[in-house]
Structure formats: C-alpha cells, structure tokens
Image (tube, protein in one colour):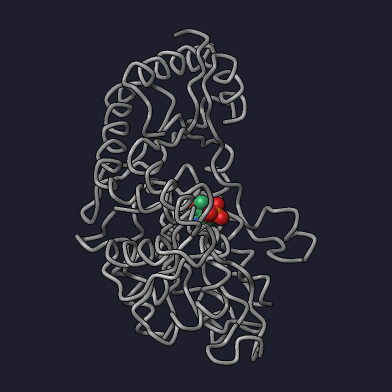
Length: 377
Ligand SMILES: *Cc1c(COP(=O)(O)O)cnc(C)c1O
C-alpha cells in the first residue's frame, strides 16, 4: 500500500453511466436537445421537492444565472460568507452588485448567522447561503431574516446533494437554489450545474439566460443578452445515472466520515468536523480538519508532508476578502474576519471520495498521526 496514491477524490461511474452514454451515441442525441437533459432536470427537482429544475454547464454559472435572474445589479448588496468559493462573490461582482461578507462559525465552518442582521442595509437584496463541507446552514434563522427584511435567498447547495435540514432537502430553501456536478460532488456529470426553484417566472428567466435569450416563436430576436450555459445530453446522461444512487453515495460518505472520526477522535492537535447538529447529521462532502494553533504549523506544511506519503489533500477555501483580484478592485479594504482567516490557513481536507476503501482511510490516519507527531517535536 505504501507508495500507492490515495487520491483526494475519485468519482465512481460503475452504474448506468456507460449504458446511458451509449444511448446518447446510438441515438445521436449529444447536445442540449436530448431526452436526458429534461430527465435530469426533473430528477433534481424531485430530489429537492421543487417544481422546476434548470440545468446549466457548471455550478459557478448556476450562481451567475441566479444573480441575473433576480435582477441584482449596481447599488444592490448581497450578504454571503467570506469563507466560500470565489464563484459566489464573482457572480455578484460581475453584475455590479456588492458582496457583504460574514465571518464563519468556528465549529460548523458555515457563515455565522448571528452576524447577518447587523449587515443588513437599505441596499441589501439577498442573502447568498452556502452550505460548507457537509453541515447545512441554520436555515430557520435565514428564512426568518429574509421574511423580516424582504430579502431573496440564493442557496448554494453545491456540496449538499441528498442532505437535509430539519428533514427538508437542501436545495429547497432558496428563492433559487443551485447545485454543481463537478467530479468531487455527490452527483457528478464531469462538469455541470443546476438551478431549482418553485417560482415559474424565475424558472423562465433562468432558461432564457442559459440559452442566449432565444425566444419561442421569434428565435433570433433577442430582448436581452443571455449566455450559452447549456448542459449537454452526454453530461445529463451521466447525471441521471449518478442520481439513481444518491442514497448509497450519501451513506458511503457518512461511513467515511464516521470512520475518520472514530480513528482520529483521540488525536491531539486537530479539530474534527462536527458530526451532528439538532437539524442535520453531517454528510461529509469532504472530511476537513483544522490544526490547533499550538502546533505552530499551517495546513500547507501538513499537506506537503502527506503528499510525500502519496496522500492527496486539498486546502480549505481562501477567504473572499483576501483575494488579490478583489483587493485590486478596492473591495473589502481593511475588513477582517478572524475565524475564516484562521480556517483558510489551518484547515485542509483528507481524501474523501466514495471509492475509498477502509484500509486507505486507516493508512491516511496512520500517516497523518506520524506527520502530526513530527510537527509536535
Ligand atoms: C463546487 C462548488 C461550486 C462551483 O461549482 P463548479 O461546478 O465547479 O463551477 C460552487 N459553490 C460551492 C459551494 C462549491 O462547492
């Protein structure tokens, strides 16, 4: 086992993926105009108890589409965590609106909901909720704030396929909710994304934005500028096959998370993910750990050492307010979010893909312990 690589993530494609792809090739339906696209959209809508699913080419443009569909623009503010993927802030900045950042909870790593209300102004139009790494954000509090201040909710559920909050599916809480199907997500189709909503008008706008604002009847006459964000039938074919076994995938993710926790619970120097809250059991999209300050090393050091043992890891998100691209735009000047900054420096995740065998997890834990005890010397 020693020098065999343990990848940070590997997709599992041994269900109906090949069969459905063959159907695409045999029938010639390979573009957006194919039956799997509609079937995948309906499947994701069903998974999230939604009326409409609108497929797009990835999770990042799903966020772009949501921001455009809600008509956000200059002078509008959108509240979001600073500890998230660039795509969230990029979508808001690209339409000329302003991301208003919130620090993280030190234990769940999600945005600190208690900090949101103080950030609401006359310009606030939406809260962009991002469920991070496996535990959902406390949606009751968000929904209450959205009602009180008449705000939209954009729910980025890219890491949450199959997760629930108080028994309701993640992806069912936003005016618009979004998913990604990148290969490290619970459902993948190589690249892909989805918006889900119950609002017919919003769904129609998303479809137009995704498809160049081609109109019914007057196809080449355009009232607004859209994009080609379409998903192909090939991608959707893989997505349909993946969706069929979402329950097994979630079960396997939880097994991986529980095994890591069992093996690591007495190890000094690291903080483990919260395994459950009243509202949800962790789904362990990734198994993140955070190094204690006393260790005096950062995640980068540990990741390099594990890499030398053939173990793939990945660092946590780098905060939005610390991104050079936004600094150059004079955004977030002087802003500080100490919890998120610390997570970005001290946090990383261990191999978490559903192809992992228990022996590989044990090997990762053994090597992690060695690296930690070296660091403590
Ligand atoms: C993966 C991810 C995205 C982006 O999805 P892509 O399909 O890679 O563009 C957006 N938000 C979150 C929280 C993600 O984890």
